[in-house]
View 1 (cartoon, helix red, strand yellow):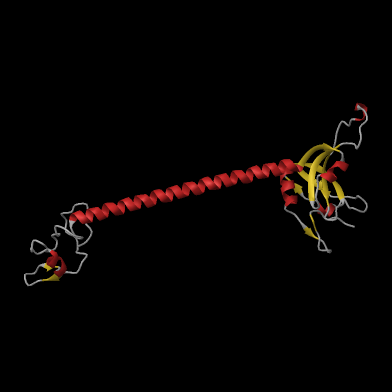
View 2 (tube, rainbow, N blue to C red):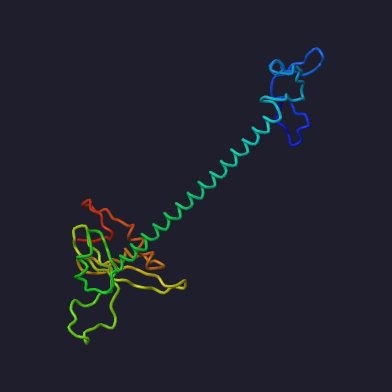
Length: 221
């Protein structure tokens, strides 16, 4: 017999094998052999017990509905857990990024103090003050923002910044100087909409030199 519709009195095609007996009835031999009351089960009449009875069908239907409901709840819970994990992961990445960005800027320092903070191919931003200040009269009014970089060989370099005003707003530029004559290497100029964009670029930038060493900046001998 077929699935019972909402109105169980409406006949549906049988889902088991039937044959037409000599009286023109659609019957199933197995169901009739199992019938305790020895009355023929003629489609669309359902047997009073067993798999094809209305009670058994309603139980299976309820079981399937419960199963589908549990699966749906499980999927929703899984999605929520995945979402929570992604949110926590994003928070950890953002926290790590903030910490990394905070470590990039090291405050006001003499340039000589940066060597102890850097490892090869690392850089830091700082406001450069004089190496020694013996009195308040020697305090500078302005201190330049600098980028200190340690090359792969351990050599220290200090690069300055420039800021340009365009119609769309200010742009930042790092002035990378030639190691031989301290002249700006103009061909290496890139402009960025923000200082954070500049830092992000150079943190992911690397140059493979002819000696097989990687540098962030194009340092010439």
